[in-house]
Amino acid sequence: MHFYQNHSLLNYNTFGLDVKTKYFFEFYSEEDLKEVLQHNYVRDNPLLVIGQGSNLLFLNDFDGVVLHSAIRGIQVVEETEDAIIIEVGSGVIWDDLVGYCVKQGWSGIENLSLIPGETGAAAIQNIGAYGVEIKDVVQKIKAIRIADGQSSVFEQEECHYAYRESIFKKTLKGQYVVTSVIIRLSREPIFNLSYNHLEKEVLKNGVINLENIRNTIIQVRESKLPDPKILGNAGSFFMNPVVTRAKYEALQSQFPEMPHFFVSEQEEKIPAGWLIEQCGWKGRTIGKVGVHAKQALVLINCGGAKGKEIADLAHQIQQSVAEKFGIALTPEVNFIS
Ligand code: EPU
Image (cartoon, rainbow, N blue to C red; front, top):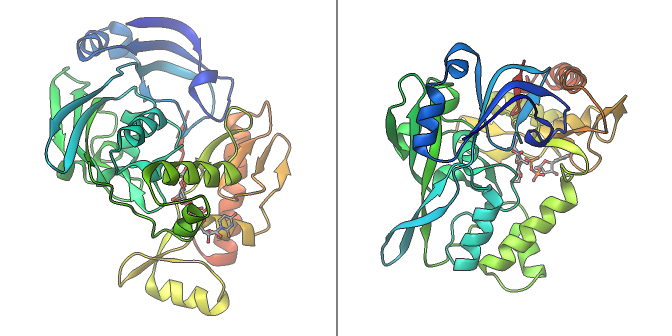
């Protein structure tokens, strides 16, 4: 394990906030983690488990212990005629995994190309893009219970997955540390190109295959989403709100051009980016923070901002959207104080 005191988190949050944690532990294996969990500092202080910090907003320095997984490695655990099952360390960079699987010809996660973050956090948050969510391929999650260091295995159904949601963000929040994720991929390519204009974009670049899908998605994301190494951000700041059909119909008659996605007979999803743009926020900056000019769902640190400035901007945006549309936006980003 590695241990540091007063450790900078600048490289552990994609907003690029210059904050520190009192204690920082990095673990390299399950055994290592079990040892870390017995440490007095860990038992006596608030605990935060992080990946690459691509969904975190630090409001100040963290007066506690940050735990980071350095469990790496991708292992094939089972092969069948049509599927391949792999165990992936929670510290594996998500996009490295996607790139590796595409090269092997294994399909299922190519639509999740270029999403920042590490595999453990990706599975907890149920990352999603272009019609695919990680829940579609997760088979099991291996984790250690913080209270007593016990190893546990969660089957997919036990993870209670929903849109950007899992049991690890709800009833089991703060109780487990994920050590690896078991993922089931297809050996025969099964393409999912139904999202918006994705198929058209892929065909513009050539034939439909895994590599071309990955490259096209990288291209689309790079054209809309700022590179956190250049402009601090955490991807989508808010979740796309899901509203009742009655609410959707009322809005639709007022704003016929409003984009929307079918959820169920009772509900419709509305892109938060569109709502924010309609309120005039797209491309606006206030001091050191702003709303990205190419995607209004992305809040940016223009350089040297404090977490609180980003939180204030988020609050103003929520107020505008509530006033104009009567919709309460919920942050996708976790606020850490
Ligand atoms: N839109 C606007 N203005 C904007 C942004 C979007 O009008 O400034 C409209 C677009 O025209 C389009 C619709 O909103 O009709 C959807 O936009 P887009 O395809 O860019 O996706 P999104 O709903 O804004 C979601 C995810 C992204 C994911 C994309 C692609 C959430 C909160 N966000 O964004 O995930 O990459 O779909 O599948 O669900 C993330 O979670 O960090 C993230 C980037």
